[in-house]
Amino acid sequence: MSADTVSKILRTVSREKAFYFFTSIGNYTGESASSLKEFMGKINEVNLKSLEFHLYRGDFEKWISEVLQDEELAVEVRKLQKFNLTGDALRNQLYVTVSRRLKRLTSQPSPTRI
Amino acid sequence: MTRKQRNFYIFPTKNNKFKHQSLDIGREAEITVKLKNNTLILDITDLKILEALQEDAKQTYMAIGKHLGIAHSTVYDRIKRMEQNGIIKKYTALIDAEKAGTKSITAIMTIYTDPKESEKVAETLGSAPQVLEVYTSLSEELQIIAKVVAQNQESLHDFIANSVAPLPGVLRIRTSILTKKFKETQFSIINDPKRLTFIKGTHNIKEEK
Image 1 (tube, each protein chain N blue to C red):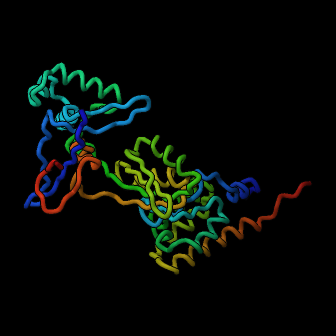
Image 2 (image 1 turned 90 degrees about the vertical axis):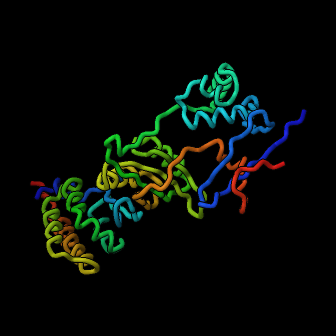
Image 3 (image 1 turned 90 degrees about the horizontal axis):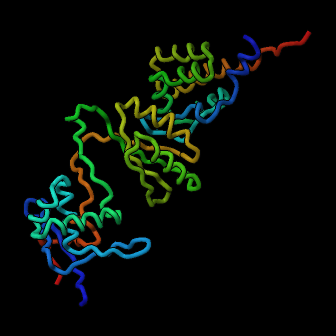
């Protein structure tokens, strides 16, 4: 993966493109994430209902794919839907999936000049 | 000659439905509408004309005049005066959206905001075509209350997630989708709370002597 692609995925997006956590239709929690790193942190903070609401609507994978443009992580998050996880099990699994991906991206060797 | 100020009382009938009696033309009652540069006084005839227009704004000056027992030219003059002074803001049609074949949902949004940003949030909401009404309310936290329409729940959520939540100063949002309408009415001059007092045990409007 090129350094450009990695930095694109890890960038901070504008507030219009940020992810806004809701617990149901129209009920905004006040929590938002503007980068993958911030998103990972919010997984441990937001109401469990919010994680369940967004995972099964496909909102997480959509934001990761369309805004962060990380197809690989979007696919991994989509797979979580199949396990019908709820509550803390969902929170833990989602956190593990995102943090693993973030670790891989941040540990990519930077390109060396010849 | 000093004009008397009259208060009107209203209360439910036995079957718990509200009833009012018509105001009598010629009686000396008045309300005062303060305008920027001068003061316009509405008398009982003006109020009766407003009541008639609120009942059916399409009726002719002739019909209103006949109903109230006054000349149609008087009706015309008074309506023009009230239009010019902004008391009559506009004439519009009440549409039954369901019968018109438009399927939509209506929701009430309560938006908790940072006080510094609330005016801007309210103004931005007001410019959105989906938003029908916007209010600020007095409570411990500053709230903006907005009535919003959308084609379905999904488009309602998209609007709130993409256009409301990202506004600077929005702290959180609570939304209630309305399911059944029990009453909808326009503000009526007859129901002006400044002129009506709710008294237990009576049945009709009564004038205070």
